[in-house]
Image 1: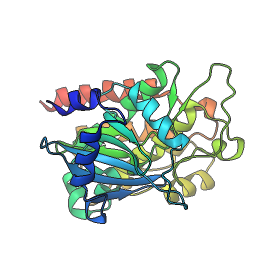
Image 2: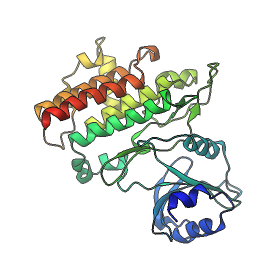
Image 3: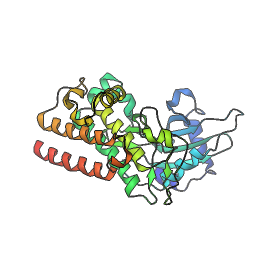
Image 4: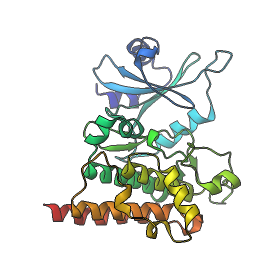
Length: 310
C-alpha cells in the first residue's frame, strides 16, 4: 500500500501507523529531531513501508497532557483543503492522549533559513534556483489568497517555513497560525508571525488581511537575493530617504556576494524580482500589490529570461 493510501484512510484510531511512527522515532527522541518551532518539534521518520516523512509533534503542556490546541486544528483544517505543488502535503494526523502530531511529506534539503546560513549550501543555491525559490513562494501565497474560498492568510511567511526538496523545489509549510478570511472583514486576532517578517500594521492594529502576507513575502524575497535577513538594509533605506526604496539603491550591490556575479540576463531578472519585493514593503497596505500580480509578473519575466538563455 502506498503511503498516500495509508494516510488517506488513517484517523486517530490507526494503531498500526501510530505504533510505526513511535518506533521509527524511538518515541520522539532528540536523535530524530530535525527542527524546533514555537508550537512543536519536527522529526524525521522512516516508516516500515520505507517511506520517509516529517512528523510535527506539538509541545506538551506543563502538566504533561499533550496540547490539542487551536494551532493543531487550524493547521490540519487548512492543509486538508489545500492542493498545490508549492505547499507541503499533509499525509495525516494523530490526536492521542500522549502525543498529538501531524504527518507531512519530508523535504530533504530542509528550511531555506538553514540553507542560506550554511556557506556551502548557500553557494549551491545559485541565482536561477533563487529566482525559482522566490517564484515558488509567490505562487503558493497567490494560491492561498486568490484560489481558496474563503481566502487563507498564512501569517508566518519566513525562511524557516519555506522548505526545499533534493531538486530545490519549494514548499511553504507551517500553517499553525493560518487564518481563513471572513467575508464580513472582522478579521481581528492576536499578532502572529516571525519577528522581522510581520507587517507593521498587523503589529499595531491586529487586523489580518492578505497584505500582511504580501509584506512578509517582500522581506523573504530580499532575504533570498541577499543571502541574509534584510532588516538593517530596509531600515536604513526607509529612514534615510523619501524616495521609493527601489530608486534609492544600486540593486546589484545588495546581491549575495558568496555567489559569482550573475550573467547580464539573469541580473535583469534579479533586479525585477527585487523591485517587486520593494513594492511589497510599502508602509501603506493598500499600496502593496496583490500576490496574484506578483506571481504573474515573476512568471512572465522569468519565462522570457529562460527562453533567451536557451
